[in-house]
Length: 446
Image (cartoon, rainbow, N blue to C red):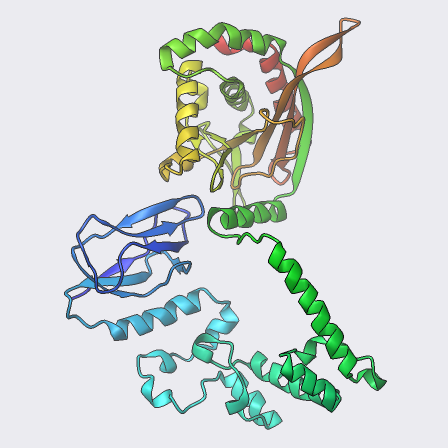
């Protein structure tokens, strides 16, 4: 009996996966343990191995198709096995799962049970489409369906009727020009009496479309897909669901620079990596979170979860998009260990080699743009966390010191927090303590 290939559940929060690539075609043999397909979750791309040896009998789900976890995406078995009935049924389930509830309710399972021969001369339509067509006297043979396998929906009937009405508001010459140039008359506003569409209206539309096409041909288009699409979805969700508030503070990094210069050769000798300001900031943030557990929290339903561990996420700009690897128990590690871990996960992130575990469990995120000419910005919270710290560049500024003006290396910190969980005063207290630690960094050595 054929073995089902399932969409794997790669994390506790994973609900769907998107198939990026099949490494085998239907009819090809595969050994157990060999890569079978590549799956993208909301965090990472990962190769899925075949769990049995055999022939890839059927691919249920095509590339770029999003499938619920534990859903069948293919079958592996003996070369002569037949799985057509199972495949047809599975395609319907996948289709319904990825559509809105309203459209899923319109799916007529009897049309997709592998018995398609008797439907060749029958119009595929939903009950709602049939009812409206009977009411308006529309012959469904003339209606083009937009649904699965050309299935006609109510909206298709409505569009067909609108097109018929539009023809009555168009002069014969305008209709002729529109037909010759494949122009959609429903998209044209007529300038004739009572909005009648004239030949000149159609010609102007053709000219505008041609100009737009010429501009489109010269413009570079990048499809939003993969990790970039996931980032867009998650950032939109965070911005729309969490009421963001951002507070800003400047830090005098004079002592922080001195500490780094003293520790630089020691850390490099021990780890082979150069200590950066990122590790100093990570350590300072971790110690500040110890004193302010509400900042190290997340919202789950109506419950605020105070996390016992301090796991710092580092926003890394990889070639595929923004990746956030996690440094676990950052408050319990010294500068040598932090430098080693931060450099290693950063390299893995940029090369797309992070594991799922290395991206899970973060409780607070740091987004450091200090390597660019950026003073301050308003970072978006990496949900389900409750706060994120934005770090700007270090540059000299004139500041008042004991009644005199001096040039000091200043750095701006921007703390964005979820106002549902954190109020302004606790957030300000956290940022104040963080500023104090960074301006007196030898406290971190105690």
